[in-house]
Amino acid sequence: MKIVVIGGSGLIGSKLVNTLRGRGHDALAASPSTGVNSITREGLAEAMDGADVVVDVANAPSWEDQAVLDFFQTSSRNLLAAEAAAGVRHHVALSIVGSERLPDTGYFRAKVAQEALIKASGMPYTIVRATQFSEFAGGIVQSFAVGEEIRASPALIQPIASDDVVAALVDVVLAAPVNGTVEVGGPETMPIDELARRYLRATQDNRKVVPDVHARYFGAVLDDQSLVTGEDARLGAIRFDDWLVRSTAQ
Ligand SMILES: NC(=O)c1ccc[n+]([C@@H]2O[C@H](COP(=O)([O-])OP(=O)(O)OC[C@H]3O[C@@H](n4cnc5c(N)ncnc54)[C@H](OP(=O)(O)O)[C@@H]3O)[C@@H](O)[C@H]2O)c1
Image (cartoon, rainbow, N blue to C red):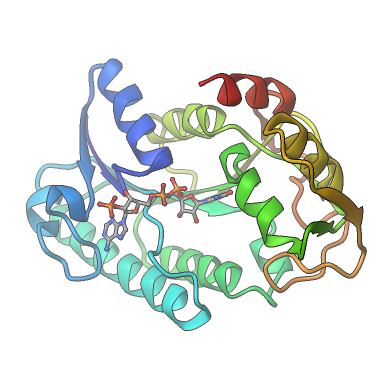
């Protein structure tokens, strides 16, 4: 099967391409660094030629509110048009659990807009919504830094290792479109301030963590449901502490 991975050089994309190739599929890593650009459309028609499935795991270079919205809307429109022209049979996109619950965050608004374009396109699709990647923990912790302290929300988070996200994506890519959304999350939830303490301990960072119910997550106030999966979600196998041990050893 020919599978085009848009964002195929990124964290998720590169692992997905390697896994699909290991299973004998013709997986194309498509991104600006390989001459395929979903914004300018450079190389897009050639990449789609003969493709069965397109997986969109691209990410915006800027997360500023308008820039990230423009990126996901323009990119999705260009991809869906090129896929229709090439007769692609399945569009798979990676989104984020709870995006519609956090409209105060520009990045989440952009993911909701991306999802809306896919649903309205008429292209057979599956949207995979994942919780926060364990690999993103450092960025999350730093986003709560105030001076020398980490003032983190105590709302629940459910970190998932990128390897578990990729395993879920592979199963979706190789199955028929569900024309709906599937959720995937980490195997456990924990308060964000607890995740921060574990992360700082593992990375030998002495900063103090203070729980703060008013602390905003990229602009949004959270509750215990904001970032966690619903009932039917697929759960990953890699616990956050095991991921920390593995990643700090590398
Ligand atoms: N971080 C999280 O916790 C989380 C949770 C759930 C879902 N997600 C979603 O997961 C997806 C993948 O994230 P990631 O962390 O794997 O991304 P990443 O490592 O930042 O990689 C981004 C990829 O997008 C590509 N790209 C950028 N501009 C492009 C363009 N104009 N055309 C085509 N490709 C372009 C990059 O290509 P070059 O290297 O060539 O520039 C790169 O391959 C994102 O859509 C994100 O919203 C993230």
